[in-house]
Image 1: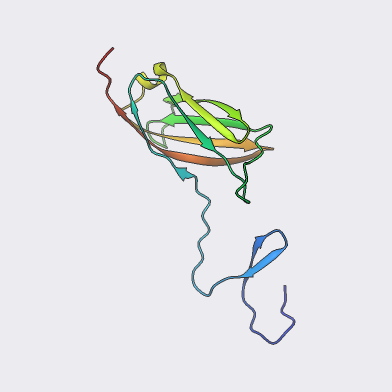
Image 2 (image 1 turned 90 degrees about the vertical axis):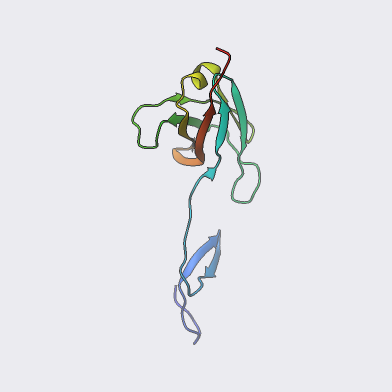
Length: 138
């Protein structure tokens, strides 16, 4: 895009559909990171929580046809999956359930994330650590 007046040109960046906004003269960082959600669980218990998903306009997202995967690994680099949440979708809400059998076998500290796929596009919407409190009753 070229300027049509005598003002100095500045770099331009899309600011939404049909909108172009000038950048500041300082550094610009673009972040595409999931929400950090750290969990502390009691070993051997069932655990369920919800993630509300919103679109760029901050409206409830349309998750029709979406698939969800939420895995747990000892570290992000671990090849072996330590467990998986069982996901269900209701409107713009993702329910993630961890069964007692899975939580009983998890390491004391591990990591997890949740990714959603819509029309072939994968987005990790949440990620964090899991710290487990050791169960007493077995």
